[in-house]
Image (tube, rainbow, N blue to C red; front, side, top):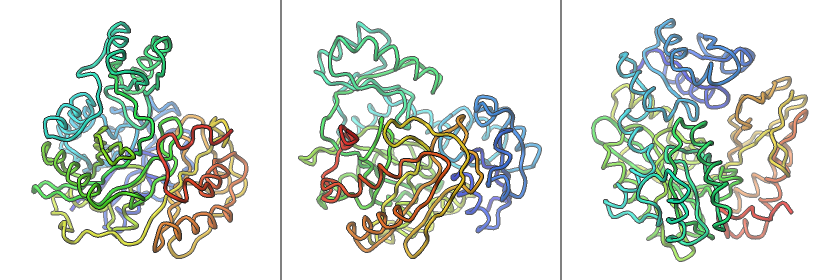
Length: 445
């Protein structure tokens, strides 16, 4: 078992990992920027180290600073959380070279799956359906125009090394492609250090369904069911639920098997997620595989009763998975709402100081957050301030529970997306499970 873990992240996910470590008797090290010294993950870790200024490039994204913190504190392992360095294969490789356990997939797996074009090729070779798209990275506007004409509009421009909904642009007309291409290239370079992009045919009414997997170093691999993540804004998820509504048992099984097939092909270790688009006709297409812990992992934890973060820690320590596939089953329905510090109409970030904070509790209610009264929401980082998760016997009961909890929740001093979440939960199409990635199009008008 691991003895001391450095958590190379901030906010709710840093707290989440610290809690799992403590329950397993593992010492913890928090890292923070200068403006995050008042954060809860710093308070609750056994030790803490300041990485540098507020700018993530000089703190949470600085590999030398993080590695120095690990050396200073004698940490034997690093958990990257999600975002920041979680999918930087060079970071995982440096950890391995320095004799540190990287709590996640191997560097080679992260590198391979991080190249979306290569991952698509692998999926196709394995017989997993993929969306029509470019077979390689596209480097020029003329090439992009030719491919888009062949695919037919609308098309998606996507960063080849991207993820998390960033570095994506929907293009419906040829005259809009040039501007979108240049913007996507800039975003890809700024966000992922590589301006390579590729094109995909855009599916108008598809759902976003993903499968959670876990693998250990002994060749064991399991799937923990699927999540529907179709409710999104700007290609970023707002709500997730499990099991996915209105899926046939046959399609569910095919998605599970596709995820396992792809994971086996790369000898996957740790937690990961295979993402798919599903059409109304129940055709499905592989999008990408996230080689990291997902933001929405609590949804899966609630229905399976399996602590995904603890499993990551055990796996990194060389242990065998605590469950075999025949011991994995779902119970009831779980629903997650991401609480963001943002304007519910424009989605503009809303930094500031929280002046009132009341989070309801009760059976089947969980709130993963690092917020508190007088906590300062900074403009330097992601707008997520908490994840509200409910669990109930079925989908309708989970929705009702979420509605009640959101009505009772009080967060003042900043704007949040809670009003939008309430409207979504009351929408007839959402209640009926008639959702797609375009669900929010026109919803706020």
